[in-house]
Length: 250
Image 1 (cartoon, one colour):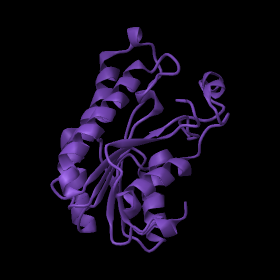
Image 2 (tube, rainbow, N blue to C red):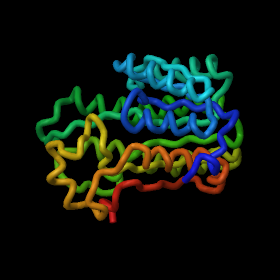
Image 3 (cartoon, rainbow, N blue to C red):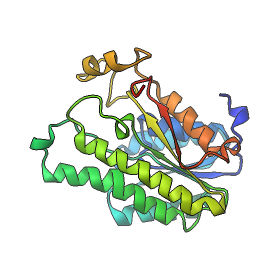
């Protein structure tokens, strides 16, 4: 889908966890469609600042904010800084997340808490803070996972459970915000080629046979789905999810 169909001119967006990979592709796509964009990063300051510079090169405002979304105060501060820098907030994309591949019986409490804090509580609290600023007609989009619907291989039990929580969160919040024409939706990436999840990585032999498309997805393919949901043509799409997963859930 071309950016001509995704007019986001004048909109202000926050994309969490966007220094690289899927988040970076989403942030850049929203900027291409006309939005000013704030991104958060935890450690990758250099990559985040480069992305912000690339977005400014498109003629948009951009700001990179250091924030651990698993920290409640940091999540709230990121929203407040976005509003201060961009002059408001229309679109929130909850992208920040963590994933570890380990048998649940051996998973440390620290790791379980990390998944819950970032993938669930971080989404909740960032969204709650954003709702103090998002106007009627705004957009909330969370990045779930195909594993939130079905778990195609072992070792991701806690991760899958956290992504499943976003399914209910999306539906429930859509009901609450419907009267304000704020849409709440989910994008469920499947195996996407990133630095952290290469198509020739250790889990690829388990993943590839389960894909209808027989290939890993590209980050821009997820970004296209997010941009559609963020745009004016998706005003009647809410409480829903788009699976961008190569048919792994089919």
